Image (cartoon, rainbow, N blue to C red; front, side, top):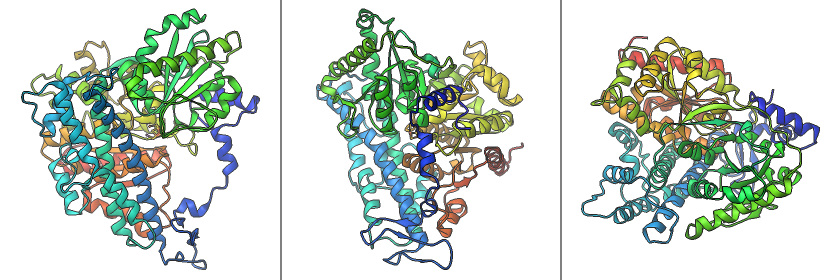
Length: 631
Ligand code: XCC
């Protein structure tokens, strides 16, 4: 089985019939994958290499420079964290530049859509708003953001202001508080260069510090997106390929940063008549990956697919354009698109793909660029009109938009004076046993969505409250688990009582969805905010809470960075694939055990989703017992 998504399965059959190569075919062509690489014991950091360390005693035990297996594994891992941090913080920096351009009057198509969030963020960061206009306050917030990238003398203020004081102290004790995002990434590159840091333990501490830099970038990304585009509120939509319409101009937005897609959403609304003049019923916008999550959360734009299956909506023959920004965009989409007349439009100077159409996006003329892009899609529709399409009639309802602000507002209907109290009370009385955040990607090595589905069902029936972000949220959206119906079907009795009470208090006439969609990958920080609020309310640190995270189908270096900061924040973190660390026994033991004594969080590696759910539930029970709570 390649995917649990029936639309994906149908399109894979079509691919086979038409001899179109997909991600899965390319995995097959790679097999068997390099065993040294899988264990993390190959090193290409200098030109004397590549060096490999034998997992058996009869082969080389050191690289040419003398690096041990643990050193190699640690260096590889922390470089992955640095790459992830660079991606997330690049996304954040981009949003900061957009807001900065708006401050200077150079981005006429943008605005501070959520002044309350701007004020809340400023207050949190200790920025006085006294007597300032919105523009002046935004300027101060932007300056504070930029200060986080450079190398300062103090630990990153945006991290310090958003976690518990206990966390700051625990990280400070380890010397794992970064003083600048860019400087932290650069330092990891320095330390992993030939002949610098060879101590695996010290490297891992550096990796944790860099992961906190990643967290800071993610948090800034979420904060600025909310300020510019609004904080999500619950929204009902649909997910999967059945949302495409034969006689419409179908445009997918793909990547991560909402800077472009937000404007596309608005301009698409204004260009419906042009699409009709071209003989279409209108324009249908859909999302892929985290750009898809961003526009689903804020506008209800339906996600069409995620991650490993991103080539497949093209095979419907109905997709007129894929507009990409950056991250997680497979260059292979250009090859598939060539066969179907789909236009792949790249928009960022740092993310081009040969064979695509590049229309460089600039904030100074955002609406103009969006018009040009949609115009290309309309032309592609005209060329396609009349050709047969093959749209799988598969789609699910999805309720998304659960920002922390939205969750707190929903809870306030139960207790206006103390909105978190109902959650705390129900954790204490056991209706909610704990909380698990599902984050991360799909990975072609796992049947798509399988681990997510098995784990959600197992945990929900044990009364665990489920949150999701990224392509994990995408999996639950496409598979119908972000619906009240899924709550009725899968939630245990206690969880059902709570989700129903909140749903009814909010006039939904039924429960909240089984899995709450908290947004894109940078929005994992929303889950941290919620956890921190609960921890502060209970007066304990995060490492005592019955809260855990899981990345059951993770893929990217960004996911490695997020997993590491989730551990550093004190959470047990499940990984559904074995990361390339097993070649380093000391590193493996620190990540899965030793780190628990230092930070409270630790990695649980378990490839069987059933067992993984059991292990996470056991971790939750251990924490409940620690708090003196019953099961
Ligand atoms: Fe999906 Fe965010 Fe992973 Fe990329 S990294 S595959 S979750 S789109 Ni975030």
